[in-house]
Image: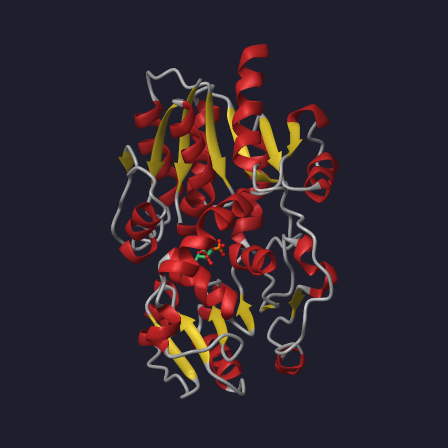
Length: 355
Ligand code: UDP
């Protein structure tokens, strides 16, 4: 079996790490193509090191702001890397521009596409990620869905059931792989002088919360009004805006550079609750049993809403405050058993054998 694996962002590296380890462990031939979509080493290099996965075989790095031709530029570069090589599958993950460009490139080159984290839908087409997910879904030959919810979404869009495999989510594999190391090696709570259950964690990088001055100022005020310390590893996109708009953070906010994965997991596990607009953080909060408050009107991860492990509050300060100190009522994993990567590799291998 010969695979081409595409990653573009921090969550792609984290969520593909169990797949890469599975390939390494089984001696499967693969190349990893990484696009450094956020142009930031704090969101890339550290993850390859911390997660102990080999450096990408190919890095596509434009080192600048996103141009209007970004996806087509990526396509051109991806096609150059894929050409003349006989890949059985091109693996794309999630909903990034890189996954979109990868799926389109593979399609145009008549290569088979497998989509990991397939079928997630927020039903909010204002989110570019939703459009990407839908387009990738229609290019893909195999769909690795998380639960029955994604299977239904895909079937409702006309995808035939024999192409869909419910395998869980590799994020569960990744959290199980790294949480013990995070617990034993990260000194982040000592460094920040915070104690378990006595601080909140905040992350935000979605356009609707940070991309214009009024919205970002409101976001900062919402977090500033939380009665307690809020640790905020600030995404580079958000940092840039805070600087551009000359905004000040209130005293309860403990601002910091983006964290590595081990520090982030440790801080997430100890937080009283996490306030976020991230996709991956909603899942990890659920896995670590940290109550999650999502500053969005919709989520493509509805399984996290069950048992009130996660609540959607948008930008409603009343709802945000009401939910700050709640407990999770019950818990069972919607993300599989921590063997999702193994299942994906075995399914790919059997699909190749029967092709
Ligand atoms: N994360 C991290 N350090 C941070 C903030 C987040 O390692 O300072 C990890 C987090 O554990 C999760 C992923 O980054 O796995 C989420 O990335 P992000 O919010 O950028 O993207 P999204 O999931 O929304 O696509």
